[in-house]
Image 1 (cartoon, rainbow, N blue to C red):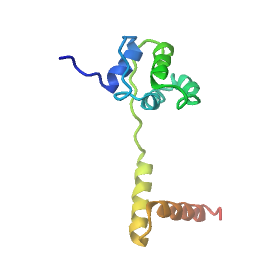
Image 2 (image 1 turned 60 degrees about the horizontal axis):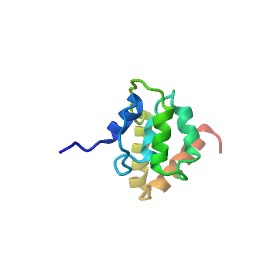
Image 3 (image 1 turned 90 degrees about the vertical axis):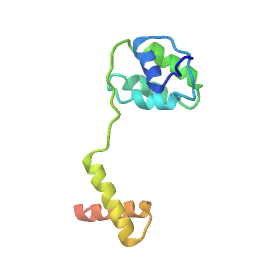
Length: 121
């Protein structure tokens, strides 16, 4: 029984130019584009494809990346939220529970409070 390829197997097939039969269910072109966009040297290629992302079939987009991405070892990490973003999320949660409002309303309140604090209102 052969092992089913994972998302990372498809990434490695692009990076090391190893042929792999594309499977949309395992590796959607949208997720592939999101992942490749985290490499500054590939952002131009991904940007060209963004215009056509939802107009072309996933296998065509995979073939584009396969042929366009230069062969070579890459270490791409998914970027994490900054501590500032986490603190902002906690503050939104506090406002939401304190005033019994939704997260969207709490975000708007926090944005208004920040503008008042900066003196823009």
